[in-house]
Length: 169
Image 1 (cartoon, rainbow, N blue to C red):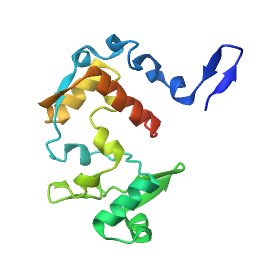
Image 2: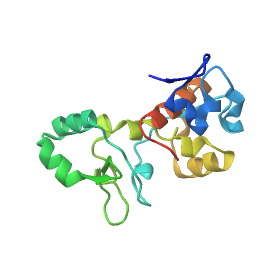
Image 3: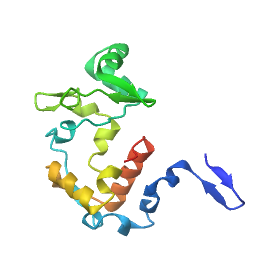
């Protein structure tokens, strides 16, 4: 629910984010040029987004329940061994080398039930905020350029979903 400001304005938290200009049906040209007509993408399950520099993968209570059921592991054990809390957020743990704790034998061991943040990759705000950021993402992700076309509207929807679930950079 928004907050009334004056007689004609309503402020909603998601609209205060820098992504404001990316809202669907308003300004598709605000996407970096390589994304303005959509882009082909298919997850190749390569694990490139699961490895390397430490990251910050947020998980909700609901996602933890799904993970617990999928792994047939008690929720309390899963939370204690596979997550950590930082700044009021529940995050997946990483190994010392930065790899996700669920990255095993060269692939994601929870791929069918991976958290929303993982499902939205590569369409995170941090990856689409500039042509340079998108190029870095393309260099890292072999699934970009493969598969079906993801429309600009869908890219914006996914970026907005990432932001709404706590993504900010």
